[in-house]
Image (cartoon, rainbow, N blue to C red):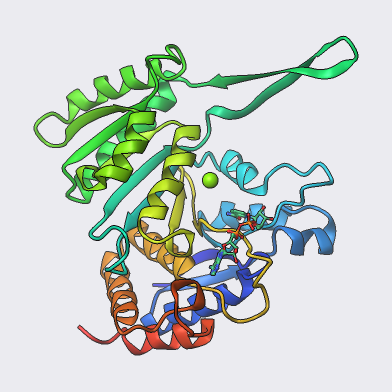
Length: 339
Ligand code: NAI
Ligand code: MG
């Protein structure tokens, strides 16, 4: 049965990696029926809005999207297209799994899933300046917002994810010793939700700064981590670093009525158009998308083929190899059948 899904190739290396990913998904036999949509810089050139209504309408219809990196111009007063998409579709959960795929790096056998609250906290944009004397921006003020209902929802999402994926422990990361209201509320919600899962999923709590150190010293103690928006933004990049960087880090933005899957990296303008970009992050995002629609078998076949390709030392430049985007994709396709 065909499954309609929105495809946004995006800017910079986006079209190159999208082409590679779609060729691999076709070879795998995925049921996606792509509705291609333009966003970001490409859309600004066509009609002025980096997030055109046709793109929004498409996701509203398909409820499922695979998205390449979108460039938000620094000037021109555009708000981040990624933040707008999260708000538009209430994508409250940002899922960032990190699993070692290339043994022999600084850390082997990493397998951590970070769940980041995606809509609230210090990223709500409640910021302003206060003038003092002749300096109009002498003082900067920012307010964070966390609601109990959202904290409960994201923490429950993390525990449910742990249950569904056979994971043992959820670590709640906070800074309740200093940000007593803002993140104290989150920790409290965590303790409350954890009780519902007693005996099924273990609960653990860490203060964010200590957690950052422990992730570097002994990352193997972590399983699923759930945290607020800003802490999650920072820790998820740290965790991506443990497995070799952004080139292989996928992300999912999940809401109750839609989900958008993407590579964590940007449009890499420095290598765009050269045919050397690594399509892995977007490909692994597609695997998360298959997991999400209960096609876990296909997702696992895809991940196994990626593992074999890397082990056979077929790698793109950023991973120390010499394969082009196309050659890398063909090498993965050639290994889809192996068991
Ligand atoms: P970036 O992630 O695009 O690039 C950082 C470095 O990593 C560059 O040297 C780049 O060549 C390399 N790199 C990234 N992805 C790669 C890949 N798949 N294969 C090989 N090398 C790769 O970050 P940067 O330069 O800060 O941002 C560039 C543009 O991307 C900006 O306009 C930014 O707004 C946008 N961006 C979009 C995101 C999204 O749509 N989710 C996320 C982050 C940035
Ligand atoms: Mg980030």
